[in-house]
Each structure stands twice: as C-alpha cells, then as structure tokens.
Image 1 (cartoon, rainbow, N blue to C red):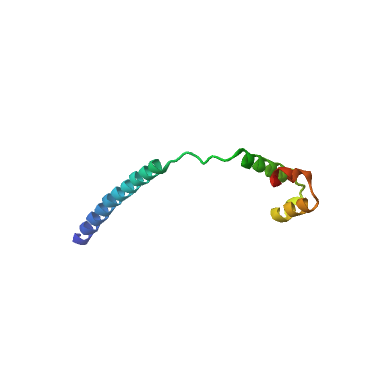
Image 2 (image 1 turned 45 degrees about the vertical axis):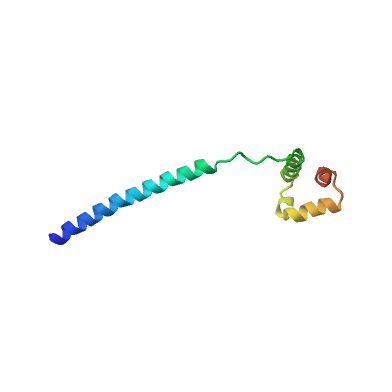
Length: 90
C-alpha cells in the first residue's frame, strides 16, 4: 500500500508539472508569433505579371504536357519562341 501511495503522488505531481510546462510553452509560442508578425513582403508589378503568365501557361497544359518537367517544358516553349513567354523575358 505504501508503494501505491508514492506512485500516486508521483503521477499527480508529474501531471501538475507537465501542465505547467505545456501552458508555459503555449504562452511563449503565442508571444513569439505576435512579436514576429510582420507585414507580407511586397512584390513588384513585373513579378506579379510573370507569376500570372506562368500560372496561365501551367493551367493551359494538356494531360501529356503535365507529365513533362516544368523547366523542360518552359525550355521547349522558349526554343520554339512561344509568344506566351514574352512577358517573362522583358
């Protein structure tokens, strides 16, 4: 019976200290997120246009073209002087 009571008190003290540790970690994590919250980076109009062009090229791929690596596919478009790539090279 004595062993049981020691074990019970150990478990209860472990649980109590565990909750404090978890609570402390949660408070610190929330403080870190709040302190490091910065405004999103701004991108230039040219970068936004290039992203739009790449998205439209990707959306227009056929199922066979989707199997080709994107860098290889863009290289093929460049080699064939595809007009869709004009905004990317300016």
